[in-house]
Image (cartoon, rainbow, N blue to C red; front, side, top):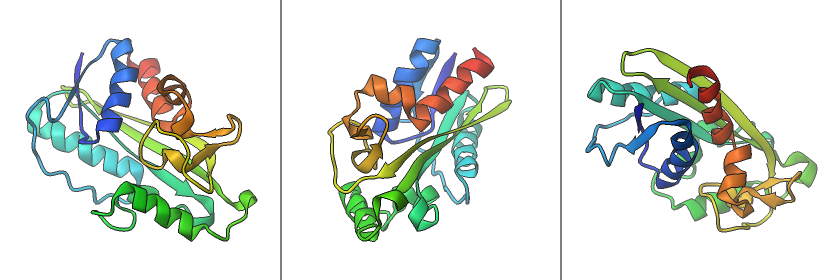
Amino acid sequence: MKVIVATGNAGKMREFRRILEPLGFQVTSMKEEGIDVPIVEDGTTFAENARIKAMTVHQHTGEAVIADDSGICVDALGGRPGVYSARYGGEDLPHPEKIKLLLSELRDTPPEQRGARYECAIRFVLADGREYAFHADCPGMVGYETRGQNGFGYDPIFYLPEYGCTSAELSMEEKNRISHRGKALRLIKEELV
């Protein structure tokens, strides 16, 4: 089955391909399909934003579409940045600066209060309009400095105590096995494949 991924994020596209192609999906991007439609992510939850993205592209193409909305939720910040993870500190703030901002907000926070989790909501819309929703998370904590070269987003500061490293220090195979997005995408296999 061909599925369009409703994202412009190259890191997410790599993850979608690595996880969905072995399940038999032909994964393609909006860019590869020549889709340039505005998507207004004005939902208040990850699930709402994932549905907005998927439905916008599905209504434009009539094809099967998958979308996610995900981010980091920090306990000491009441769940922030949450749905605003990609826009944290401003739309145009480069990601290394977003990381610096988050670390500065947690500067005086002791280790036992630095709990965090990555959350991911997936919306899969089939060509016939049937919709499926999936959700998963990955618990961890916010570290004190950036570590690792793999991954993207907040991965260099997302520390996984049980592995003794950040998400950015894992191989892509390890990350896809334990990550919020990997878990959510594998739920598709259980439901549809």
